[in-house]
Image 1 (cartoon, helix red, strand yellow):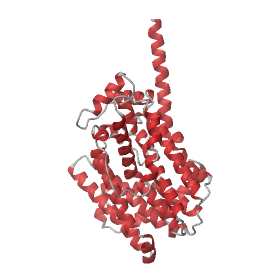
Image 2 (cartoon, helix red, strand yellow; image 1 turned 30 degrees about the horizontal axis):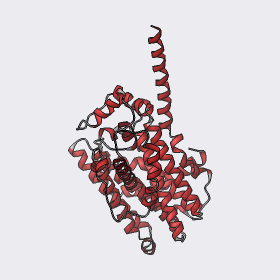
Image 3 (cartoon, one colour; image 1 turned 180 degrees about the vertical axis):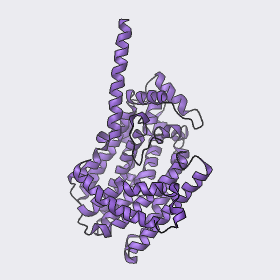
Image 4 (cartoon, helix red, strand yellow; image 1 turned 120 degrees about the vertical axis):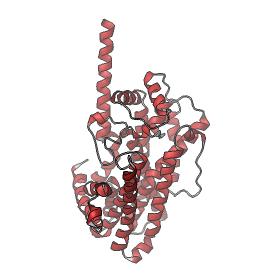
Length: 407
């Protein structure tokens, strides 16, 4: 992250924290003192995410003034939405807040309270005419509708073997998905010579279902936030609206693929952030999700022992913990088989497409800070350290092999 982006993020943090903490302080002290009800909200007050930063940049770079009061409430609403979804996710992922019945109930309550927080900020800080002009009530409802549909697909439909057998058909998908669909043929040409065990029909179904999953669980929020950030203060043409939707949709997909790659960072690397704690690593595999890294690992042109370990674990039903040696074997295999590298190429394809849409919209000129968001496939500290670990392990294996040959 460059220095300018860091400084701007600090300013955003102060504004977001004010909205989140004001909302928390409306509740009785005995509820405020329940750590599990508020831990995610308090973390978000300290570290607002990339979505708020993008909204801030789109607003200010397109000429928006007085951003603290005009777009500040929208940033607060955005982070409230993330708090709500994170609280639900930890139940799905059996993490802290989802391991016992009591904690699960509290997480569900925390999610509902955060959703109410969105409506509270909307009603308290935006004038009725602004709400009506931007259809903000509908926008909030739509964001949650598509996200939870995405979560259902993520948890129950894009797992193998369903992910390659049943095409998921939804008639009224939002406009931004058309930009995502355009990537399918490009991705197919990238992966089809590197996999085995699937026919062309199954590969097509997987790719369509996978991009649908990625779009619904992450991209749709980016798409709507992009449009709202600009329309809060200026009118845009239908072509500009479409291109901004394309930017949000493709950026959301690209960043989610990066997130799916980061899921395989080793806890022993000692890296954590709000979106990825030690509890999160290898959770996609534990929950049998069909992400790009897992798909490319399971169907790679390889007969290695590590592939058998990955396959045996994935297709053994029931949630099980992985040992450190097992995680290391799986990560080494995903890197050695290029499953992670190809996943990052797919992410880069989407991120490049997002950047082109934003530039073509001509609503703004990218500055150095906003350009920084497109470098996540190369500059994420998780990814950088995963590759450092891989190179070290590869060198060690080479040295051991040479010693054995000499002996």
